[in-house]
Length: 299
Image (cartoon, rainbow, N blue to C red; front, side, top):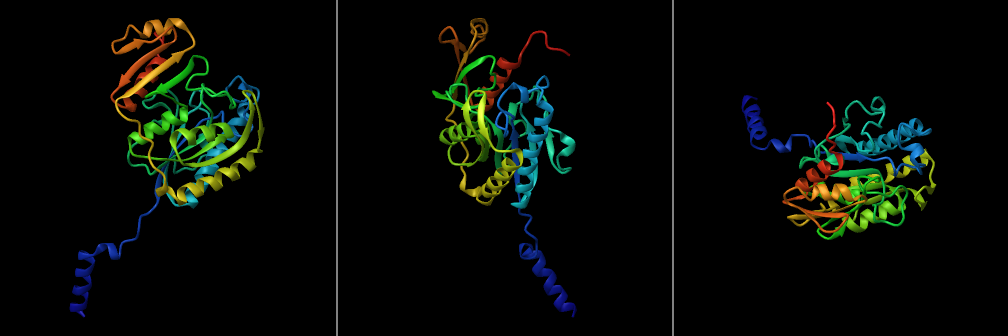
């Protein structure tokens, strides 16, 4: 008997993988915006001053929970959620599962992708919208609807989805799914490449759409999230060639003039500057500074 026990112990030590349980599972990053949430069509749903904002915080949170539920069913074991709209404090965090972590508020390095690194297996964009250069799409803009006309990288006009996909791609992580209106989903798929798309509304104008109800949208998100994670190895990271050349076109003259005083910044015309960063991370930091800095910021 002692000989048999010794033999079994030797096998365990030499070939532990035969007896170890597969830890499995995937680590998922969810970046949640609000303009692409089902039913959103105007500023009345998008900020604290809007008469429907509190209701739509509920709907945004429900879409995130639908995504989390489906990701869990598909085998995800770790999830980080980035509250990436407006003031970054939209999600009702008490209604999220206790075992997820949330990134909130601003400023933060990497913006809507704060916390991403090479340990993640896939990224999901929820509630995303089309770019400022797109002639269609509900509430279409890029990073700042008040100030930005266009953001181009390496000569290509970029949406928020494309910029954020490039940040994920810098760490070798693919975007596997996006939800929003039909224009946002199609635009991101064209720029970034194949990913699952959950269309929850169809744009009819900047402030109008044909939309699913919240629960119907949640079901679409569940279905597409599960499909994405079930074939997560099919997707490829979106990687920009380095160095990354940024062309930023702003609505107003004066910030462009002042930015041209910075070393490494070239003014191309009345509204556009050029900045070249060693990679997308450096460009993202530059954009965060340009769009968020105010001399009277407190504390």
